[in-house]
Structures are given as C-alpha cells and as structure tokens.
Length: 392
Image (cartoon, rainbow, N blue to C red; front, side, top):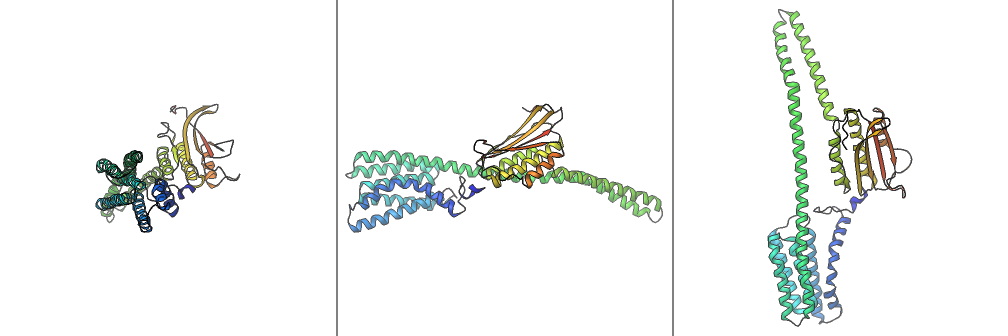
C-alpha cells in the first residue's frame, strides 16, 4: 500500500530516508524548548569566545541527544556506552548552565528524557529524580529566578518518566512481534508433523503390503506363475488405492478454510499497517464447497485491499442470513481506501465470480461511503443447507 513509505511501526527501525525524516521530525518537535539557550546566544549576552563555545556545546549536546533517543527504539544499546554518553550529557549540561546562565538549565530536561528513553526502568526510577535534583541545586546556587527553576522541575520529572513508559511500550511491542513470529513457526512445525503422521498412516501399511506381496510374487514366479500374477494384481490394486489416498490428502491440505483465511487476513492487514476488524471464527458446520469458495474469495479480497486500496481500515463480516430463497452465508469486506477504478472488473473479481457460480453464489460491489464514493465494499453470498447453525 502507498502508506508504507511513510508509516513507521512501533519498535521497528525506519527502512528508508522518508521514514528516517519522519522519525527525526517527531523527535525534533521536542527540541522547541531549546529556544531559550538559542535566544541567549543570539541576543549577544556573552563574549564572542563564550558564544562560540556555547554554540559548539549546544550542537554537541543536541546531536548526542538525538542519536541516543533515535536509536533506542530500533535495538538495545550497550548499557556501558549509554551510561557514559548520558554522563557526558549531564556534565555538559552542568558546565553550560554554570557558565552561560539560567536559559541553559533546560538542558537538564533533555538529560532526564534521555535517561527515561534509554535506561532500564529500575535505573531510570532513581536517576531521573537525581538529574532533577542537580537542576534544582545548580539553580539555587546561582542568581537564577526561582519561578524558572520551578517551571523546569515538572517537565524534567514528567518528561523522564513519560519516556520510561514509551520505552516499556516499545519493548513490549517488540516482544509481542517476536512471540507472534515464534507462534507462526511453531504452527508450521506442527503442520509438518501432522503431514508426516498422515503420510505414515496413509502409506505405511500400503507400502509394507506392497513389499511383502512383491517378495511373495518373486518366490512364486518360477514355479507358480498363475499365483504370482494374482499377487501382482493385488499389488496394483493396493498401489492404486494408495495413490487415491495420497491425492485425497493433498487436496485436503491445499483446500483453504475460512478459519485459516480469517487468521491470514488479520496478519496480512496488520503487517500492512491497516486497522483490521475481522471475526475470529466462522459459523459452525459449514458445507465444504461453500466454505472453500468463500475462503478463496476472502483471500483475494484482502490481497486487493493490501495491494491496491490505500486503506487505513478494513472490516470483514461473516453472517448467516435467512432469505426468501433459503439460508445464505454473507461475507462482506469493506475498506476506506480510494475506491474502485474503472468499470471493468479485474482478474481477481472475475475469478471470485467464477468460483461463486459453482455454488450458485452472488457478488455485489459498491463504494463504502456512497456520498463521497470512497472506499470499496465487496459482498458475497452463498446458499447453505437448512442444517447450518445460526452462528449469530
């Protein structure tokens, strides 16, 4: 989807220049508080040498701050290196505040934010108040207005502890993503084990029987060719039945199911950054053929949403309904994207229509928002037997 170029997931490193720029922009917004030391330098309140050293110190401070805060969402940093860098920021804030005056006390707010963004919660829990205490101590030792000191205490504490919460949220998101990948791998492993068990159950007996009868036919062939021919006929029959069983099993593996496609839809939409509203389970006791048709249709519809719609939200509903023609199962896939283009259906919709025709199903399409023409809603309906549970 088009938003991939700009969307940066929580806990994910940016993958292109545009995402880097967006992330730097969000971090850089909080540099607005640096206006006080910048104004102090621009107003010419210091000697040329002091001004030059102040500019250098501010550039080094801001650069170090951005590097730390920018990188902490991407990967875990070396704790010793982080501690050394934060100590350097703190020392620089102390030197600049003592030498250049009150406007530079705001640097301690950024030191506190850096502590919350990069250090573990237990360490940040005592270091943030310590940084704030240094801010207050330096402010009280010099000729600094008390109201400025008081105004900086709350941002230092609040900003630092707020960043600890952001850091914990990012770490949790990363862990959840890793856990989801692990679950997917375990599911794949379980499926491979199931395939191995099924193949063993299907072919183990048949192949053993074929081997035994082949050995028996070989022993009978010189003296009893008629009996050997009967054994060969049995081998042929067993082989054909084994082939039928294998084909049936493979067909069952290849046949999509609604529970599997609903889970796949949630994963695909989430990976594309689209807010998904997808039911967890379909109604019980669905006939095999209508379920297969709807599963293929759902896969195709969700693929279209991810690839072509530019949507931010997609809603999937699956509801049994009673109509004048009998019970039907209605599948709806609605998005808020740019809507359909042109009047001729694409290959995907044509394929869905052809599959629906095999079960006497119907398909309708319309804009999700009829007023603006935005969005695309696909509704599929397949007839069901009277034994289907209501599922509502």
